[in-house]
Image (cartoon, rainbow, N blue to C red; front, side, top):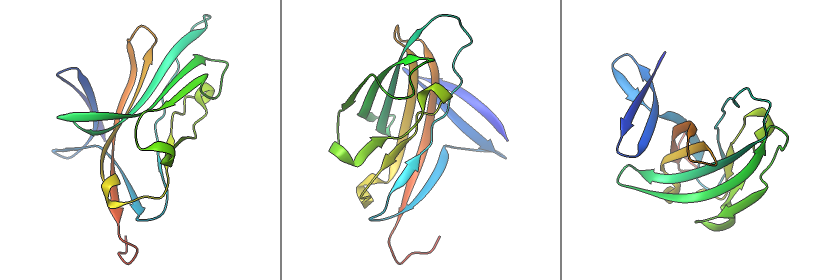
Length: 146
């Protein structure tokens, strides 16, 4: 598997390439259940304390809606110093361990409206990107087998 980075207007899209087809990472879930959207990154090697910003978005390149914004101090804090749930309320929960480079979230009480693209961004507080990852969440009805 090869990884491609493509600069699009103001968005770095990280995708996996299988043969000649570029795709986002896939997560499958059942309507009414929960899903973990994984996002892992490598903290830069430094002797300094880093102030980092994690943001999760839902949407596509025409319109991304912020879901969660998390400010944290690396490498010592495992969770957010400050969390803002910007959309969709309490169904989105930060579950990662930031000191281990895990910025994953969980989506609960899934519905068909949760289908689609999600993007995880980890930046230095000055805006320099450490990671931008795209995940495609596909919902299945209860009776649909994977």
